[in-house]
Image 1: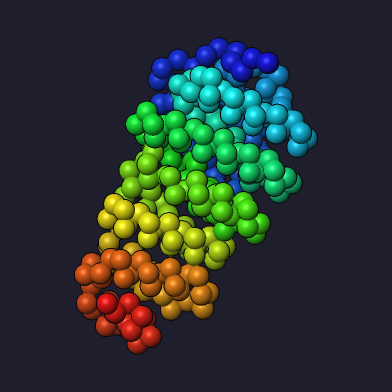
Image 2 (image 1 turned 120 degrees about the vertical axis):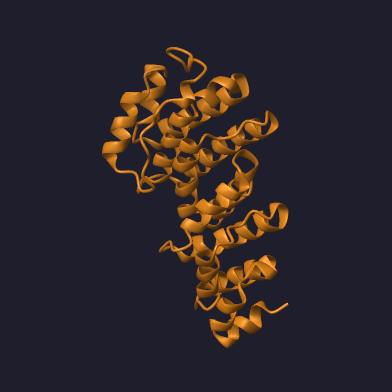
Length: 249
């Protein structure tokens, strides 16, 4: 069926959207549903259904829309990002629905990359922290899919800004996510040189380089090595001997 009740006008994506929490409560999803005034009623019903089949149908319809009318989907991306990350954050979400939501975002970002369109700051603050928090998913297939998507983030948003958001999530309780984010930060550093280099940032990496979790420890060491001379000598001297030895050239 049709997607739009009224096609989003140019400038729609610049609306002053409310900031979106990483862990999305039901009240926020209900409020988002009321904002879907440009989307057809039948699609909205599927988008906010608790039935996995209806949710899958809604994601598929949005994926079709990216192929058919990508400019309109980009204009409505503030809505799509909030809905997709809200769906992924539901405790009852099925793995296949989660994966489909990741694939939808990948389709959007591929189009944006090809057309050299960047995310707005508000859009990035919605989607990147939510994905960064969930990248260490307990299911390997969803973990890899999320990581693959986030490897493209610096193609649709300034690399330094992406790296800053990733740094902010390194203290996540999910240490798998922290390890994966350190790998992603290494990719950003080696390809763009845009990793944060402030004393606080480097100090955090030195702390993480002494962590028990192997993936976090190894990722921090790898990133510190990539930063090289950007690591202040006094901070390095104050680090444990094992860390100093690990990051030495």
